Image (tube, rainbow, N blue to C red; front, top):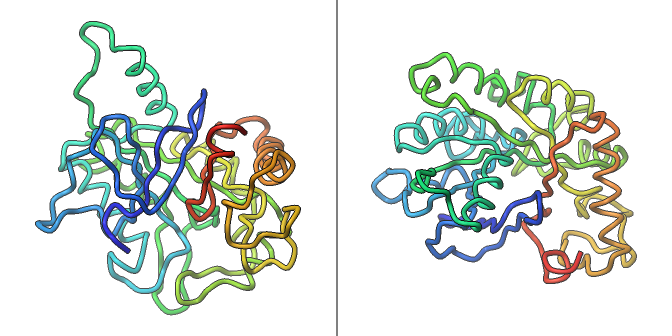
Length: 283
């Protein structure tokens, strides 16, 4: 993957839409980036400072080794220190969106106009976001929640009082069950029950992780049937009608809201980073 290869523009609540693409961003203050954690530094090893707001993404099922580049648990722990040493403040997505709205209106005199924020996000919804586990080859893995709690006890962690992340989960129980047994071993690790939804409320109650919407079934290639009128697989850009968008986004939002008793975050992350004009402008 290239540096800065995943882009998010905008936000997810109150009129914003999170988007991702392979386009490299222009350095303006209101651009939200989502980058691969292993490629978040420049050639000199320094955390990039060209953007005021950066959104990082991690996958707790990405465990292919014991190094930064092939294990997101290791990368996440190292990045928390890297972010802090670079002078960025970690904020919740809700705070970031609120800040962007205030910026659009014009900051009041004396407002925070020189912020450098980082938003933390997790994708797909494995229970490994909140529970430690033992990989059959690479051994013990600290959960993302555990990494965050450990970080807060360190000198760097005490500089990040607003530490927070959002986990974007796949809603469909049937789809998650299939994905657990048909995962790509060259990219990920899953086990029976690892994509369950019993941990969502635990995450919210921790005060450190919110639960967001990552679609109904991700239009995942491993599924025989997907919630789409044309049975589109692997390409969320094929969601071009209200009917299909409702099946993927609204249906998921309702399910997640029910499972979290209305405490889910009002954010949506496009599967594969795919979006289109209909989704961003009309839906």
